[in-house]
Image 1 (spheres, rainbow, N blue to C red):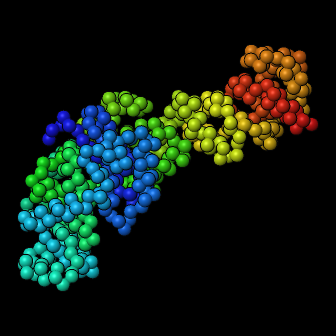
Image 2 (cartoon, rainbow, N blue to C red; image 1 turned 90 degrees about the horizontal axis):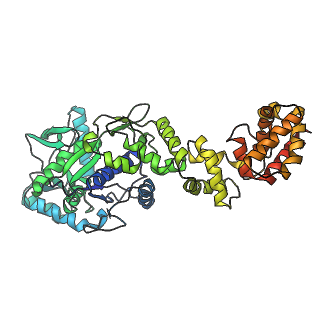
Image 3 (cartoon, rainbow, N blue to C red; image 1 turned 180 degrees about the vertical axis):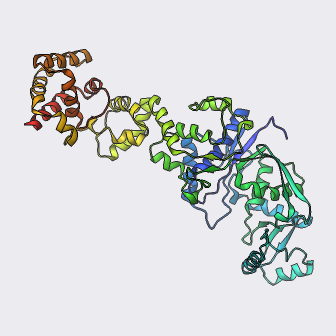
Length: 482
C-alpha cells in the first residue's frame, strides 16, 4: 500500500440523522487524512432506497459542516473520481457483478424471500451457529438458470464464498483477524431491483476512488471477510482496514440510534459548541499520549496517529462533555458566541438590536455558562426590566432597612460619571452616610437590577446596563418595598 497518498472516506447512508457514533467515525477519518497530508472524501451510500430520506442527506451535510469536517472531495463538492453518490453509479456495479458471474466468482440466486425465511427458521431450530443461506442455487446448471430467467423469475447475484479454510486480514488497530469460512455465507451482491448491496458497492467504490485506508466502526468487522473475498475475486489490492472501538452508553451497552444516541444537531440545539464536541469525540478511543484534554483542532491534528487509537470500548460521558463545553465557553470569542445566542434570545421574545451590547452581555455571562442555551436562559434582565423579584431573595434583601439607601442612590447616581470607581464610591458614601455596610446594600442593588440573586460582578453589570436603566430599576425596587 502506498502510504504516501492517503485517501480516506466517510460513507454514511441517508436513512436517518447523523448520530455521534457516525460523527466520531467521520472525525477519525478526517484527522487521519489531515495528519498525513492526505484527502478526506464524503461518499453517500444511498442504495437502500426503501429507507432513503432526503432530509437525512441534508442533515448529514449540515452536521459535518457544523463540526468543521470539511471534505476535500465528494458529494456536493465534486472531484476526479465521482459521482460520489452511489445511486448515480449503478451501471458500474452491474458491470462488475457481471464480471464476477462470468468468471464463476458469483451466481444467480432465484430463492424467494419466503424460502429464505424458512431456511433461517429451520437453522435456528437446529441451533446452527451460522444461519446464512443454504446455497440452493449455487450449482444450478446453465440450462436451469436460463429457464428461470426466461420464465421471469427475479434473482439476486450472490458471491460464491469458499467452502473450507479461513479468511484473514490485518486490522491497523486490532492486528490479524481470522474468520472460518463457515461463518461467511454467499453474500448478496446485487438485489432484484438492480441496486447493489453495501458489500459490492463499497468495495467497487473504494477501489475506483483509490481509497487507501478504510476506517469504520467495529460493527463492520464481521463483513470484512466478504470484502476480502471480493478484492481477491477482482484481483485488486486491498486498502488497509481499521475498525474503530465501540462507543458505550454510560449505563452500558453499545451507543446507537436505536439506544438513544443523539444526533449531532441535537447537541447543537442543546447548546454545545462544535469545537467542544469535536474535542470530546476525538478522545473517545484516542489520546494524544499525555494528559491533555482540551486541545485545539490544530493541536489534535499535530498529535493524531492511528497507533494511538485503542481497540477498547469508549464510554460516552455526557457530564464530561458538558464540563468540556464549559471550558470552551469560558474562552470562546464573545462576538462569535453572540452570533450563536442572539437567535435564541430573540426566540425568547427579547429585543436584541445592538450586537456590540450583546457581545458585552456574553462576556459577563459566558464564564458562568456551560452551554449556549444556559447563556440564553440567564440573560433576560440585560434586555428588559425585571417584572418581579426572586421571592426568597426579596424576603432577605428588599427590606425597609435598605429603602433609604436605594432612595439616596436613585437621587445621587444620575449626577456621577458612569465609571466603575465613581459608582463604587457613591455606593460607599451612601452606605457611610446611613451608617450601613456597603456589603448590605450591594445584594439589594443586584436584586433590584436583575430580579434574581446571582449573576456576574455587580459593578460590571451596572456599567453594561447603563446609568438610566440602572437608576430606573433601583427606583422600581424602592417602590416595591413601599
